[in-house]
Image (cartoon, rainbow, N blue to C red; front, side):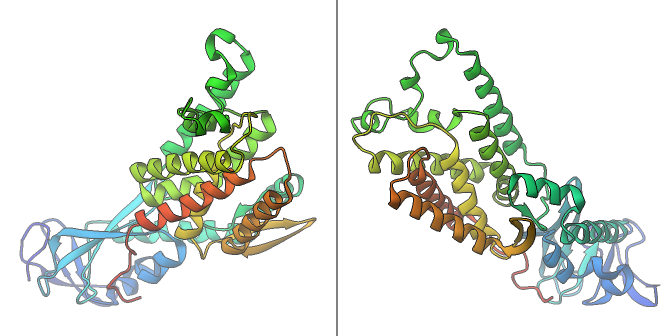
Length: 345
């Protein structure tokens, strides 16, 4: 057999009592099915990556399996700033690891396992106190693989724009109706741009902080999973859909509406589609429980429907529902294929 990386002939090498195929030129190694976990532990097992949410999609590699010539599949196993590119043969289940990648993979997975155990215990006393005073949900375990630059940018933009709102400078903002969504005007074809601009304004600190928190909790994983382009499409589609849903239900209203709630609700809908098995820590008065995100968001949607049906004022319930529905649908259309398609655990 020849090295798939540099085409140099590979040699048999015994390590940890396992005979593998090693390239002395580039120092890469090919492991037959089941051999890599015997050398590097659970970190080299597909099931570990799946359980820890460290790899979500695969793509064809430029390399071919040295054993049967099948094109390998690339799996990026990563968490935060650490990543290892693993190439696996979908036919024979063999694994190619470049120099030191086995050790890096072991360290990455062990670190993730340790972090997961801490999360399963509830993020410590700080996590409990935060939830006790805020009643906000916390993810049990759903690490991001890359930094969420768009989510970070949105948080900074929303805070910065709110700071400008507080300045109350007429020369900067002009008439409020030019930026906030007024249903009657939008449906008459006036100020159509407010379908976008209303989502960058907020009515107060509590309004802003609530949207920022849910944007941070749910948005980073959605951006990580879909990528920047598709995340942007989803966010803007949910924002516009939320505004339109509110305008249609309140077609004769002259009262302006503002807030990023519709777009953030779209991220929540996308999160449900992309990560239905993830669990959340939820506070019930003084007791914390772990529930699947499908139950939490299902209860949230039911609450929006009840409040909208009862005519409760002060919150754009219909914008939440419209954004959530479009976010979920968009995620269904844009989600990448499964990472482990064609592979055995």
